[in-house]
Image 1 (cartoon, each protein chain N blue to C red):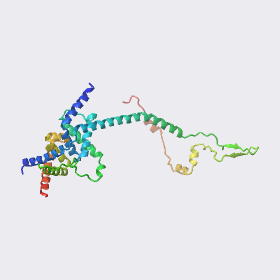
Image 2 (image 1 turned 180 degrees about the vertical axis):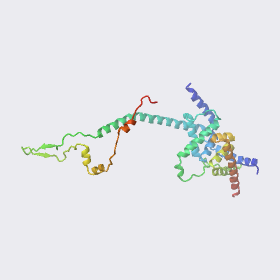
Image 3 (image 1 turned 120 degrees about the horizontal axis):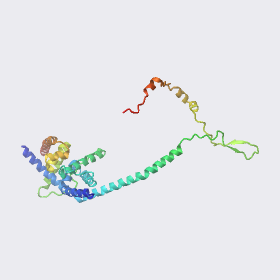
Image 4 (image 1 turned 90 degrees about the vertical axis):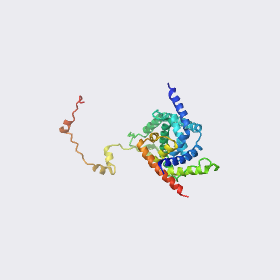
Length: 178
Length: 148
């Protein structure tokens, strides 16, 4: 029936709504934590699903598939905005939402840790950043992460080990700086 | 520090980042609605573009044909004589040429072109080619209709 693809798409959208927060986090990681770019990429990814340009084949989980769509969309966006990026470098965007006042439960300390981690992640290579984010932030397995990244699992493991080592060094160095 | 401790420390750091980002997630419905609007706008603009091409293509082809027809070179030679008028002040047949009377172009021929300044020397500089299509060449120009 002609309604079948539409119904499948609606079901897919419904399942994407359950992973919206994770998708936003992944879009942030793909856009070097630029909140505006991440929102644009996420919207463009949803648009591809709505237009039927991105189709879920059922070979993987919807989350792995949609993360791949986000990653490809972010790459397209980056290519398009190459001239925009020649402008003065943007600041690391962690103050997108209004900053909350530090609470008594140590939220200031958590904010500081989040900023430190974001800065350390920004210093990693793109592949290392991707695999570390997918495994530690999104809690995917290395196999799922390699599927999202479009690389072999061995390659993903190498990037994971190197990224973890580099991130540990960077976070240790940041801790030593007063 | 062991690998397990490293992982735990990294995980603790990552949880702060996750909490930081989760507080800033835009609502799903709002993002989806914007995506729907953008998709509809794109499809409408695609249709409008296709319609514009559908309408404009024959018009542009007709306009191009008209322009070509008007600008085509004409070699019609009406007359080589200047246009003349009869002077009203004289009864005799004094003929004056109009100052802006159009003079018909000379007949276009190869001799005329070669007499043009510069062209004769250019023509003389063209080397002579020896096109020899003797029997030797003709013997190679066979055609076998049943050849596969």
